[in-house]
Image (cartoon, rainbow, N blue to C red):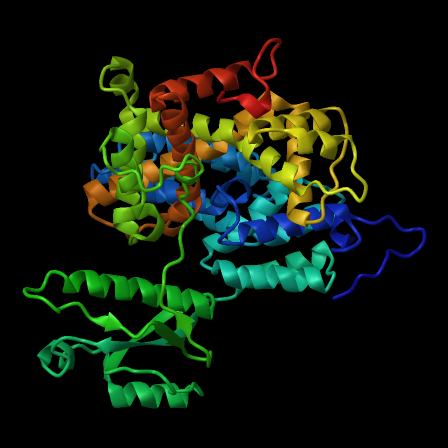
Length: 548
């Protein structure tokens, strides 16, 4: 990898720009790190799946419609949204492919039809060389927006099945080495074409009821304590402190070792859930707490990290432990809590139940006419879109740190609330001032907020469209779980990764409105939709106060 400057007399293309010497490259890198960090705040996370996965979703949706699980309207909406997403993706393919794709998405997409078969072919063509086409765009002098570029590359790699920590380390290595964007994309292209690997995974257990009976002896994945120890030693792993009576060995295909461990974690969750169906006490097996993956001598922790559905208003308003009364909001928060650590099926079903319970009116006939799921998804999208500016403006207000106090920092020091702090930052950016920020993630956020100030309505409607797509995906997945009885879908994991933080953000605003102003979720959603319609117009709301 190199950081060499272009030769005298030659022009530098975006592909030749490198981390550490190009603001454009640095901000692209910052956004990739945001997307690949499981603890990134919701407003800086990746809310989308990639274009190629969206096309495959349409094909899968047609199959579920043939089983009466998804409605004609749901599939038609998804196809139209896929057309919108594909039309905005400059790396999808040449004009001829785009023309055929548009025509196909507008066709009757019945499962087994020629149109679905053609869409499958077009999807494979779009996926083949997708990263390479991004590279050609940069080599040709195109400079796509930082957001669109980083989101496209990041979502494509995640959709392929790479784990967040693996991709974060990959991005960090390129940033530290001051790679060029060309080198980054060449490496990404290699990842995209690299086949899944076969892994052997051992999950030791401290206790397994009836481990010496036919319950385990007839199970082909069960390994005795001696065999587990033998496996660990053969893998070059230490057995010191590993208390176990045996374990299960799974053979999985994954993109990286941590991905293999996550697949094994899911199997353990299913195993323990099944054990609860046995009669009597003490039937639940107890895992040792670690997972060993072939080729990796150190174990991975057997745990699920939170998916990021946080309702911080409960803490800010000192109501975290207030469970004396049961309201519709309390019920929704209880349902939403499963989003963070629950297994995929219950997490999807309960997460959506929390959204629909609060954002659909039984007294409004229009809600039933338009469809409860679509109405709830669209209202949540409006709430989240209105919350987005305030979240990053407030975060930036705490990161502004000039060497010598300036007018912005003096005003911030005198501010009495986060609402006032966010308004101060918004005003400064709107007037062309810059903040003094150290972290690349904050500088990328400043760039987004500056762009927002110059195109308020357009930017917020774009954010709303992104969130609407995510929320409707959650609703479709819920229908597949509840009506199709399946959690084995293409977008299941991506749905939970992208939607959990967004649902948390929306519920956070609903919770604040209920506690601070005794206001209903439906009234708040109405204000959000009206604010998005009026923002940027004379007398319209300011971006820092869209929900006030």
